[in-house]
Image (cartoon, rainbow, N blue to C red):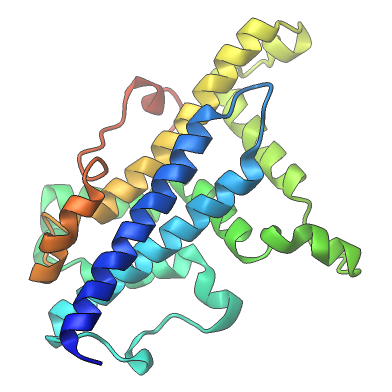
Length: 241
């Protein structure tokens, strides 16, 4: 396959990825206390993050090898294991974080966020689970797979954990107040959304500040609006470590 075709393909892939992430995150932002339609939202975000991580790893290898990698040089597993986001984060560190970027103040902070931020890692695992197994949870239940988790329970626990950050005594639930509950829930969704956007920002900054190939810099406008993301006040209301 000519190199020019591969270059066009990676640009097209990043364009598709941007559309998927935008749709997923915009849909997440629209979730409210009355309409908790998270299921499709998490599928979109899981797919978008997987695509972004894999495209970025390919560009990291392109820089190291001086060419696009072959299938045998890509180290993510085939099958369901290849869709897990946590191992892809590890591969991102190995292939895309240069020594110089790792020891810089910003690069070190970015890598620490991906690897050590407790909330982001929890969110990443849930999104990864949705992308790998929970998307087929109902089919698995129908076909008798008793080991399958109920997506509603998984998401419900995450919601409660975040809810407790803003209402540790659960006063809004003990004394039902729809308006106060709606306010707290809006903070929960914003915290969740911001944690994902911050993770995307870390990856996107590799395209402008990291040492990926020149092709990554050409593609960086496709990620505009992400690499400058900064955490707002609600992001800092809960414990971070």
